[in-house]
Length: 105
Image (cartoon, rainbow, N blue to C red; front, top):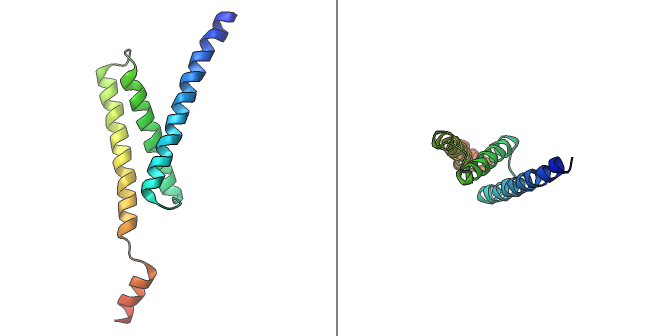
């Protein structure tokens, strides 16, 4: 029984480290946004953070195949690109004042 208890400790330490990395990535991505994210942006941030953290962990795992690593890394890259595109699109939207100014012209 002590063996299973010993095995659980490294697993929870690894998952705890993974959770800390996901939170750090979420904070970094939200700082890029510079305001409270919408629900859709929060979902995109969460997805990008989780996939990026998994890709980073997989890169350090010698048992992960190169093919799996490439697939995971590409998936994380696409998630980050989608998230940053969402941020960029929002920045390009006109403000209410800008829209009203166009109507008044």
